[in-house]
Image 1: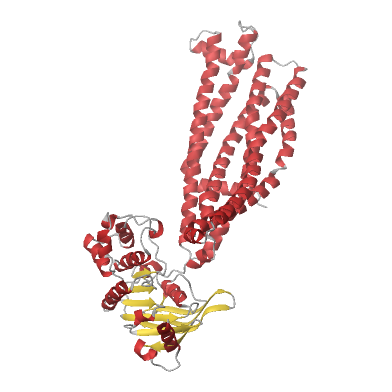
Image 2: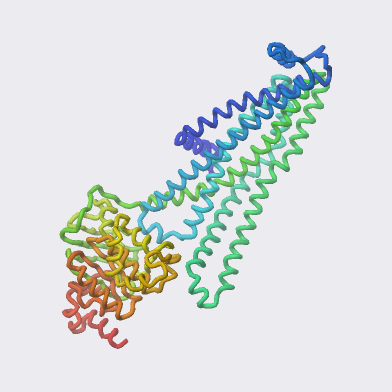
Length: 592
């Protein structure tokens, strides 16, 4: 169970991280304490005026106000004492609004800090963090759970404010009538005990609320990413029902949670009023000064909604704990996958890339890569071929540093990749994945995203090299055409060509093509292949290819099986090697 002391520590931590905002809040709370004291005390001369307009037997508090009026040369009248009471309450309202503004500012400053911290941790994690996490859960954490945490930190700041207010409204009655106030306070606490027992139930609801939100967001994310196949299979109703069932489950627990939180002040208020009435009834026997009794009752009744709100906030905080725990859990997982960063700056590829005795697995005991030794020399084209699951894409992930070997080393110019600042190496890479993802913006912005210092000439040159120039010029807005979400407004082949242009505009030392020509027609493929052959004079190119005709010009072909290199040579050498794995692959494709 998350202890209250831990919540206090969280609040102290954020106070330390954002001192200016919290100092401003505490200053306003101090001002409010003074104004609230005045607003409570100012009711006493007004009550005395109603009891005796001549003030023949005023209370001690009224006497103080009468002296102030005399010093200010203000005649005593109903309007004087009435406006005094109103002015104090107007000022009190203004200060409360300022406090509310300060609390909201703290909430969003802290929320931004949490969001930034989460994004830093997530984006600094290796690909394994994302591949082993459900994207819907990550989206839910950022879109729903983080705002809940931010709201609750706002509640914590509000609770501090309310505690100050409550202390003020209780301190004055203690001063004026200690027996009546003590009786009321004891009854207020006794009546609150059943409501405090709801904390455990609120925590359980909070955990279930987070779980059902994760499930619902996960299903919605899958539906949106799989719309094409859902429509193609005629499974619209199934997808709709699946998400709505998850939504209904989340709605059910959310209604319970929100009803519980909202009902606390409503349910408790009559009991609080009962406590005040009982205390007042018992105090009458002591025959206190009537105007002071009015002030005590006014103060206690003013404190009552604050105490009710404190109970509500307490329930909300217990409800928030599962969200905070979930965010911290994701942070911890991201830390487990944090990139191993070196301090060496990569400038350019001088010799090549080498993998030495590399092992890698996603699951314990199930190696995707085993005892892998391979070298890729600078310049020329290296092709990786093999059946699905042979480890081709995993090798690319290892070279990019998206995954790290369980054993063995990845060397860049003889230096372990773990000793190099990862991004200085990646910035020299042009990468075209098998599923090219474009951003929902213009073709121009997609290219500039990869290289924001490129000139207009560079943009058109990259389009020309990727054989995209002709179709881009024919689009209604040419290079300023919006490509849609993930490039949906372009054909598969067009997307691949723009993705290739995006890689080429970086003028990389290393170009990695993962099935980059698979969606192209034969003519476009031949043109791009010619471009790749020319580029190999100036850069190192790694190609993953299923279509073997695309790698005839490769300087080196590495044939993979079960995560190991089983054959190595040129296309012409391997294609005539009797009984060889590569020859067998060529023959199968020729039959197809």
